[in-house]
Length: 76
Image (cartoon, rainbow, N blue to C red; front, side, top):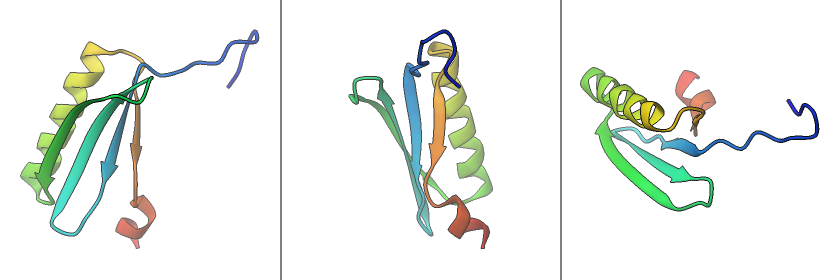
């Protein structure tokens, strides 16, 4: 939502490229520079690791935005 003529731009974006056996998460800053990457297995341990990894970035950069590719196909 835009208010008072200002647009909120997140400091970082966390994106996840989902695959059958492995997910690849990447963090980019508002200029598009890659500042982190994590490759994790598609297991419960991998999902927990991804959550912890992403939370660590969220603590460093409040106001981050998370995105996930392939969510609809994963749920189908």
